[in-house]
Every structure is written in C-alpha cells, then in structure tokens.
Length: 420
Image (tube, rainbow, N blue to C red; front, side, top):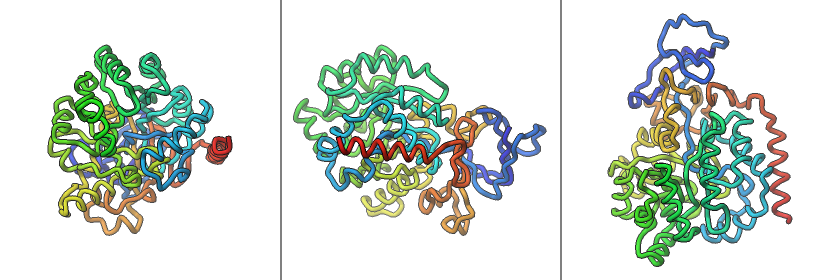
C-alpha cells in the first residue's frame, strides 16, 4: 500500500480542477482518494506540494526504432523511409527488438508516459520486453506488401489480447501506400469479424493523399470507409492532410485523429489542425512517433508543438487551448488505446500515475498549473512515473533496471546493422 499525501491532485475526472486530497494505491489499483484514511501504508510519499496526475499515454510510436535516432536525419519522408529505414529494419532480429524497445520504455518513463501504442515487428519480443520492464504496451500490426500478412495479423490479435495484463492488441496495417487493395479489403473483413477498430498511418503527407486519389479516385479516409475498415472505429496516425469530407468520415465512424506534431515538423510533412479537428467533435490523441523521425520520445515537446503550431498557423494566440491538449495527451490517448481503466485518478482505476515537480524554476510562480505543464513544462519536471501500481522511475532513477545493460545492447545492435 502506497500513500501519496501533502500534494496537489489533478484527477482529470472533472476537467482541470485540482484538489489537495491524499491518494492511496494498493497493488495495481487506486483504493482511496480523500483525507483521514484509516488504512495502513507500507510506504508514505510526501509530495511536498507537487502534482499527482494521470500519466501520459503515447498513442503512436515505433519503440524499437531507437536504433535510428539521428541515423537518417534531414531527409524527406519518402527518402527517409525507403532509402534508409526499410533497408536497416530488414536486418533487425527478434532479439534486437527486445533490447531496442526497452531503451524506448526508459525514455517514455522520463516523460511521465506509462503506456505506448506500438506498431512494429516481432510482437513477442515487444511484449516480453514490456512485461519484463513492467511497462504497459498496446500493440498493432504493420501489415504491408513486403512483411506480415492478414493471417499473422489475426493470429497476433487473438494471442496478445490474452497474454498479460500489461499487453493488449489492436487490428492495424501500415498504410494505404504500402498495401494492395486486396490486403486492405482483408483488414476490413477482419474488422467486421471481430467488430473491432483498425489503426494505420494515414494522410501524413500531401503526396500520399494525391497518389491515393490518383490510384483510387478518393482519399485514404474515403477508401478506408469504402472497404469497411472504419466500420467499428479506429484511428489514423498523423492525420495531417484531411479534407472536410475526411473529417466527416472520422466523425461518422468515431475515428481518432492521432497527432504527431514533432515528427511531422521534422519531416516537413505538414501541420495537423488540432482546433478544427476538435471543433468537429472528433476525438484527438497524441503520440511521439518513433525515435527515427522525431527524434525524442517526449510528450512535453509534442504538447507544446501542437499549441505553437495552432497559434502560428491561425495567426491567433487564442487557438490551441492548452487544457484541451493536456487532456488529449492523457485521457484522450488512453481512450484511443482502449485503456479506459487507467485514464483518470479515481477509486477503482488502475494506478498509472505521474508526479510533476512544481519546485522547479519553470513552474514558478504558480498561476495556472495545467497550462504551465503544456507551455513551460519539460521532462525535468517528472519526479515519478508509476505503471500498474509500481514505481518504475523516481527522482531521476530507474527502479530495479540495469540501464547500462540496455544502453550496451542498443549500441551493439545499431553498430551491427549499420555495418552489415
């Protein structure tokens, strides 16, 4: 039993209201919120006025792509993907994915992130790495014309939704431009079979949309709707180049717009319109994308980038409300990933929590804490990250984790695939 006391609590159950209640965690669950609890704690954590809140959820990433951090920079998306990333990825083994994913998990924890929505290969390695470290992972499949198949997608879906409490799986495929019409139609049939949402990269670049229109006479979103892929909802990573008709499709089917502003900016792919998407009643989640294209796995950078992009592109400093962005990075991303049990700070919910240090210069003076998190917050403010009731990162230290071993393997793997 862990008792958090003498601090501020942002539950995100009632907007951005902050209270000064105690929060008690027993095992993986939040069991008490209030004052004068009659329980006995095994550990008492004095928050010293700092903020306890739901952890961030990274709604789109490729964790094992840590190998590509600063390895293929300053290239446009298509050159980056086809000439650098795909050839190197082809050399990765299952064991590589295990070690490279662990490195990403460490970085997520330093950013107050307790869960990631990962699209990559060798899911057994990803799942094992996640469970071994104690991190929460939602996986999906990067089905394309060159790797994986509809049969493996279905196999993964059934296996990894019954694997471990930290692991879940969603139907998915890489993108329209890497899949045949037949494969995408097959994904639509799986969505119907399992009454399940589907996730994919979509409308990331202007050329992607134009080429899809050239092939099929319609945008990726319209094509996915026609194929039944969106019949049970889902989500589209990036969602940059969306027409009004695309937005109507998202709204009609409950599709999540999963925004990745730093990756899009670095690859010059464009700017998603957060405010316009939100005004249409469309759900928004936020992800970092992988370390190969971002290069940081940092939710604070993503939140600030969305806010800055909105204001700059609209020439309106009132655009891109910080509280809505913070909600998208926490509750929104959790719901997008199907993590309804660890989205807020409530009794009975799973304890995926983070503590924000308010005793740093960038958080003072205290005027508006939630807006401060988005506009001036950074990873230096993350004092603790808890996943499933266990503290994995605290005061700059990783708990029960040999980080030097993780660094060693990540470097060794990277050197090998560069030299082959």
